[in-house]
Image 1 (cartoon, rainbow, N blue to C red):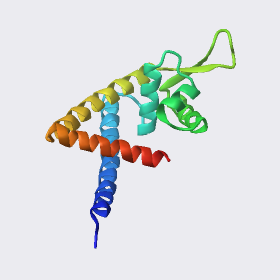
Image 2: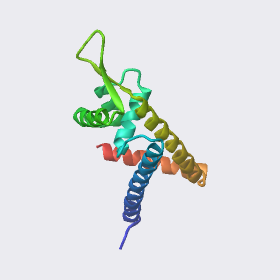
Image 3: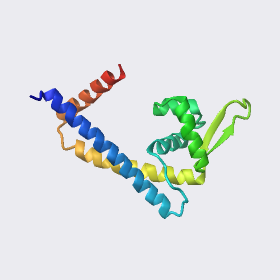
Image 4: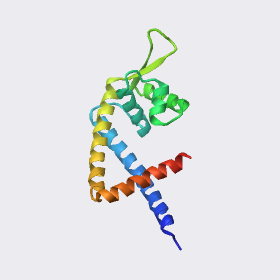
Length: 156
């Protein structure tokens, strides 16, 4: 016999899977738009898109800042950054004073990807807001409390 909690967990697993499918679908749409703009690019992962976005929004984006913003390890970011450089989406440059400090900036192609990625995020956020607004203010408060509590639990 399923308890209410088990049903919620089951539904959250389904939701998590659907979110992942939607992310992949969104990423394919981004790639199609890039390809339609004559960009010679085969694949860009969602993580790469998010790193591109962070680089676009940070004054002096370095590996540590990117890792902290995205919640990944520095070594993982190094691999993602290396792939982005190979794909011609970002460039690295050194600090004029301290040559050990390496920063990243977008190439024109990286800027196109960032723009398309941001447009897709805006569309998805509008869709999500419309869904959330189907619930009353009180129900939204309960949902928010549940999500925050679950995040705290998962951080332990």
